[in-house]
Image 1 (tube, rainbow, N blue to C red):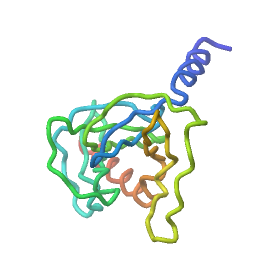
Image 2 (image 1 turned 120 degrees about the horizontal axis):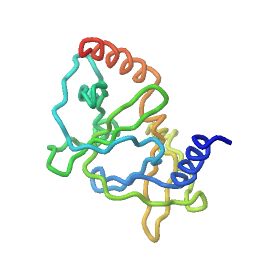
Image 3 (image 1 turned 30 degrees about the horizontal axis):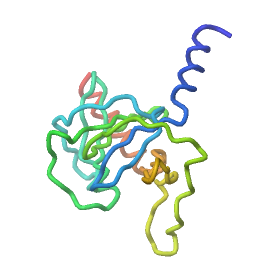
Image 4 (image 1 turned 45 degrees about the vertical axis):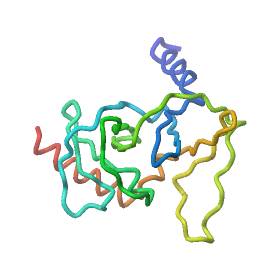
Amino acid sequence: MEQDELLEEEEEQYQENKYLLFRLAGEVYGIMIGYVTDIIELKPVTYIPDMPAYVKGVINLRNKIIPVIDLRIRFGMPEREYDDRTCIIVITMGELSVGFIVDTVTEVKEILDTDISDPPKFNESGIDASYIAGLGKVHDEVKILIDVEHVLSQYDIQLLQTNANAKEGAVS
């Protein structure tokens, strides 16, 4: 095995079972740390017309155009005014990087697979909870673990990639 492969394998083992925890409307959510590339303070977002309400626009992060999603709106929660604790978690899914606006980031926590329960089934009630990967038990608390690959629909991903690529061409 080459040194690069060893380092990659070691990094994957370090990130295994680790979640970045953040707050939205008083609840604690988690994203697998392997998806997270940056946590940045809220910065001005360039509005893009004709996007879903939860797509706030795009930001320029180190010369890369990143679409920004307000997770409160995406999850059907009431909006709130942003403050000095509001931040953007930048995640990468394959070729697409996306920023998630959250109320605040709290910590990175290890949650073992044995401490994760399947999400409740809401299909009959009409609630779309496909973005919930599971419920993590940490001591006597429950953390809602997000499946970042289901936060956005395929249509959303295509829309964001197209607009980010168009904006990136304008920035270059």
